[in-house]
Length: 156
Image (tube, rainbow, N blue to C red; front, top):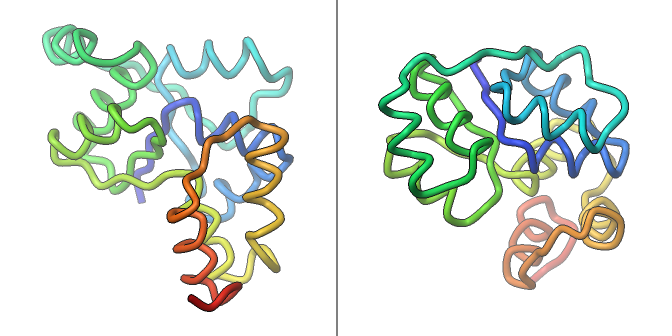
């Protein structure tokens, strides 16, 4: 499985000490140079499961940079070039652009739901709370409730 990531999902999981879930779920995760720079700026340890890969299409990158930031643009470009199975991305505009470009996406909440479904974590409720409180991750009440319901942690 080819998985490319923007900064936010990895950074948020690093902040709460659960980046290992990405390695357990996906093995290797590809990151473009802008994402690597952003991660190294805020996190002293660069996980071994991350593999830096540079985008090749200057024209696509230039087009994407007119809409979104460098990390998102490079991640989308690399994901398209590698025909990635998934792009890890959380920002609303970046997700919309990725979908427009034909990419399958997953965010940090989806990663946690998948981790719970595969019994890699006992519960996601506490992790969602840590994302909000420690990483400053903004999570809508409906999204949170849907995630908790999907893994059987609440009934609606």
